[in-house]
Amino acid sequence: MIGIFDSGVGGMTVARAVEKLLPDYRITYFGDLARTPYGSKSPATIVEYAIQNTEFLLAQGAKLIIVACNSAASVATETLRQRFTVPLFEVITPAIDKAIIATPSGKIGVIGTVATIKSGVYDREITRRNPQLKVYSQPCPLLVPLVEEGWLDARETKMIVRRYLYPLKQKQVDTLVLGCTHYPLLKELISQRIGKKKVTLIDSSAEVAHSLKAFLETHPEIEQSLAKVGENRYYVSDVTSAAAAIAQMIFGRPIQLIKT
Ligand code: DGL
Image 1: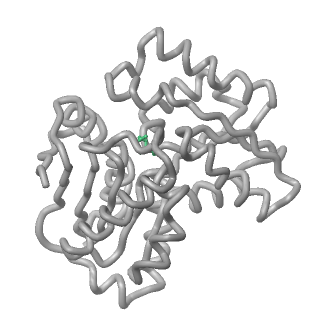
Image 2: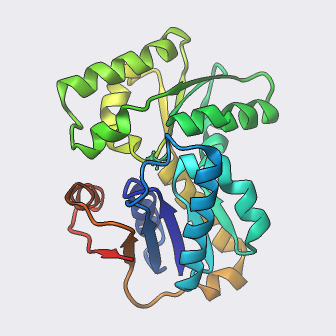
């Protein structure tokens, strides 16, 4: 089966995108709700958690892992690749690929948690591939709690989004990477605030699902090893009512959260 993990339930945006594009494959999800948020933790702690989450999914029978958390992907990918032999996908590379193609003027904005932006991964990888491109990054630490409160359309959220996006607007970015699991839930609002007609938003959840599909088409040995019968399972290290509400919002149906 496909194993997907995140620091909480935000990564279900990735599970949902995979389910939509690849409905034949079984998914096991793990959301580390007991230790969320990762975005404000140190790289060493995030790496340690990412290793434990991967071990949990492999023990459940995962044949392939998706790191659905930008914060974990930005600091732990290299360690996970060294430590585990299964194919490993993460949400950053496909978003970078798409952003590079999408930008007409070469000015790319990136928003994410403090851990993701501090890691510098987007900046480094985008300019490594094309040194002509300019990357403008903005940490948006208040957005995750606002989404978790369900304040998707609140006046306060609009004000905060406007404030975070202002420096990127000033730089006239034409492409904006939503570098956090929670931001697709604010897509409409972000799009309005940054300039709907002028700026392309890159949603990593959709991009990782497309890159996984392309991979499975060219790797039949992995494709055949993935379970196609049974139920998708959603494990969490703690159950909270806010998490259940977000899960329902993402999938558009109630999701049974199984406590590990
Ligand atoms: N999943 C995290 C990310 O994508 C957001 C929530 C957190 O900080 O743990 O960066």
